[in-house]
Each structure stands twice: as C-alpha cells, then as structure tokens.
Length: 315
Image (cartoon, rainbow, N blue to C red; front, side, top):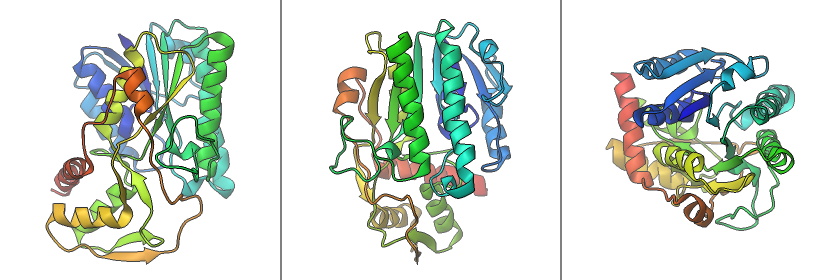
C-alpha cells in the first residue's frame, strides 16, 4: 500500500506514518510545519520517520500544494492535518481554522475524487457533538458543536459525506476522543499536566475539575485508522467513534498522575473557558462491528507511557 498522510509531522500523523512504515507500506507525508506550536518538535518527528527509505516527506500547505502530484500513485489517504485547539478558534482566529480545516479538506477531497484512492480516512473529532444530551454518545446523536473549532471539524466531516454521496468517494470519518500519548502537542491538557508535575509547578485546572474526558491512547487511535483503511466493505461516507472506553474526571486524572510520578501534585483553579464541554464519552459498538476495533490501552498504562516520554525529554 502507498499512503498519503497529511499532518505527518504532528502527533497522530507521525505515529500513523510510523505504524504504516513498520508494516512495510510506502508513506508520502505532507506537513506545513506551522508555528501553532514549536516547529522543531515536528521536525524531530520527521527525522525519526526519515530513517525509513520508504518515507517521502513534502513540506507543503494543502491550500496551495500540487495535490494531484501528492496523490499520484496513492492508495489510501489519511487526512490528519488540521488547525487544532478550541481556545484559539474564537474571534479573529476563526479564519485560520476555516481555511486549514474546511477549505484544505475540500481541496483535498476534490483532488482525491479525480484520483485512484480506494479509501479516504478523515480524522474528525468528538468536538462535533458539543454538549451531548447523553453519554456515552453514539454516532446517531445530534451534532451541535460548542466551539468554532468543532464547527470546522463538523463542516469537513460533512464534506467527506457529501463527496461520498455525490461521487462515491470512499471516505470514512473517525471521531477521535481526546487522544494522548508520546509526542502529544505541548498545548494539550495531558502534556501540560505532566510537564507541571515533573517540574514541580501547580497544574492549572479550568473550572472545578469535574469535567469528564474519554481519553484515547494514540496507538489505539492509529489501530482504528489502519483498520478503517483496510476494511473492504466499509460503506462510503461512514462515520465512526474512536473512543478510549474509560472516562475520567480532570480531578481523577490529577490523582492518577500523582501516583505515576510518585510525588504530590498541586493544582491552581482557573476560570472555565468558553467552548469547553463538561463531558465527553463515546460508544464504540460501531467501531467494533465495522472495523473489528476495540481500545487496548487503559488510562493508567497510557499515562505511564506519556510520563516516561516527557521525562526523557527533560534529560
């Protein structure tokens, strides 16, 4: 298989690329190396991938890249590139999200329908549900995002569906639930919590800490993505939750982190942030039925892996 991985230098993208390479596939990775967070971290991810001769990296922005060239000979697209983060998507920041998450996706879909790709795997998000009425949330629940970021992820998901409906493009949208693990972006909560704990600083907790998150270990997310690429009879336009199956409150996570690092961990309460929902959690029945996938890594094990990785960065 020859795969195109967008956002290949990022957190999930680099893990996906590495998994494909380990399985013997060819990978063409593309990434704009934007400065949303330190581009040196992304370049370090690319450096690891370039140890494989079957990895071809292109630094390019999907908004103006030669997409026909990028898709030449490609069997499967893993579209993981996006402008991430809820808090930056408000006000003047929204234009960046609309371009990176919606316009770039439409452009890639348009190019993909004119190519020979047999599967287009889109990394959607649990943020499309917003403040869901029931938990765990199934794929047929109403989608009502609670942030501009969520709006753009849902818009791109709708684009995938309509390209499937109108052109038969074999898309599948995977709604990832709070991905964590080694190489996680430094702005993400798990990374910030661990960094504060290791450095002896108070962990900033927004609101009362009783927000519930369904954390999903990155290797489980990669396994779901690879399964979505390989399942032969997956209907075009499918939408599937990819959730860790073990919800925990922010306060519970802090307590667990204290056990893993083996020292007291202190918190500092901060005002609740606009766009932050109180609870996320997804059913995985459909993922099991369609993809043969279930998460394998529980939060205590996954947290220990991420702590070890962040400790290694501190020397």
